Length: 245
Ligand code: APR
Picture 1 (cartoon, rainbow, N blue to C red):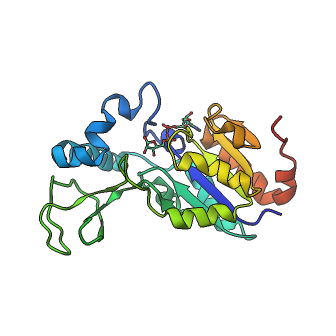
Picture 2: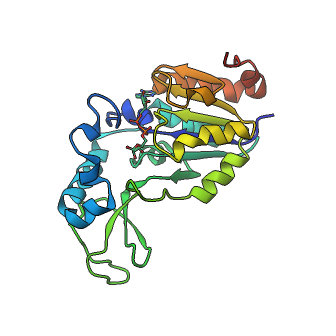
Picture 3: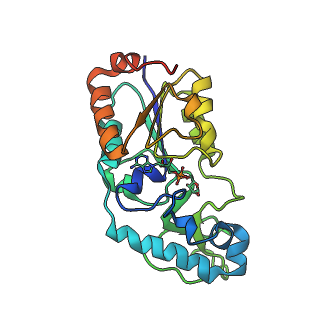
């Protein structure tokens, strides 16, 4: 019986809102080298470039809206009464919150927050951030940085996420290429605990072998349909999914 659901989302769920994915021909990393904007040493070496990169993305949040896939996730969270629906996103945009999602872990951080590593205080942020701002809480000089997990850093909320994965009966991965760990390993963990895994992508992800079913197409179209059927027919809908051959 399906009680607890974990949903992992990646850049693909926000693609139809107009936010470019990371790994595509027009993707974000094409114009910026990861080592210039998304590693701790870049922040030390050239904080202006790093802050500008995230300032631009933060400003762009005002130009984008959640799409039907974000709303489908929020609907499932509100209407599923048999257990929990935990949302884990690798995205740093705020489209899940704006679609009404709660019980949400931003494992790679959030554009709408900054923080001071010295005192650990996280501040909401909807403005451009200057390089090396002082912490308004503890007064430390120049410590404030994006609340974003850089390569080489440990993602946030891993304990809570692993706990949710251990008790998941259904694991959905939406719009993620399955190449960046630890998130890429979640399908294997959920499957090893007996969860039914379903992925939503344009084509098979790197982790496709761990999914009982892959639904190919744009998540804004496929996910709302899936959520409708899941809410309507519950276990019998999941049992009707063909086993991967
Ligand atoms: N519907 C469903 N899937 C889509 C759609 C769509 N409309 N558009 C694109 N996709 C799929 C692509 O096929 C691809 O598999 O979304 C996936 C996006 O993959 P990535 O760009 O690699 O994004 P993600 O998996 O979230 O990346 C993980 O890598 O660079 C880091 O920190 C960054 O959080 C990010 C992490």
